[in-house]
Image (cartoon, rainbow, N blue to C red):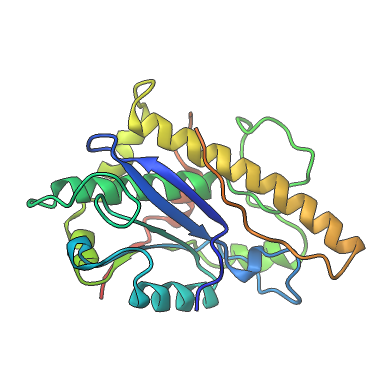
Length: 246
């Protein structure tokens, strides 16, 4: 059973700006209130849902099981509704081309979100344009650095079909490298940075509070959101990107 999402928000589709419902779930390693959490390995996963006209959405029970399993394995998990599914705008296409762009939109978001997410950064930080490092405190640094981050792209049923049809990661990220101002790609990048930096502050504050009050709990937030380096998250992966069809 999935917990409440850490983030619930919307993104515009790269295809035509159709508004898509999205969720992000942080794993236990990112919970400042967790007792003896395992080190965060910076693994992330996307899970796409079954065919919308037949009731598919990110609330699908199989998607729920997969996401919960990956969370237990230490993955940060992202899910989204294709156009026409549940609360997302638009309608399901006949060609699946728009849906491929929907998927790529969320992949772009998650890559940049992971790039800017730095949960062990002190509460008072320099500008996010400064060079990122992956160093954390103590055992977190040693454990996390021993394994390359993994980006898992997956889907169930119709979502699996779309997963197998999206282009290589280099082609997806090319659309986000120098996006035109006001474009969907630019908006996605800005939203990823905004939400990640917001979580950096929340997590740092919660961690500081939990050190003084062990019973203090961290809760997710429902948020919305409104650019400038190649994401270091992918650079750290050394090309380890896996597609899984279920």
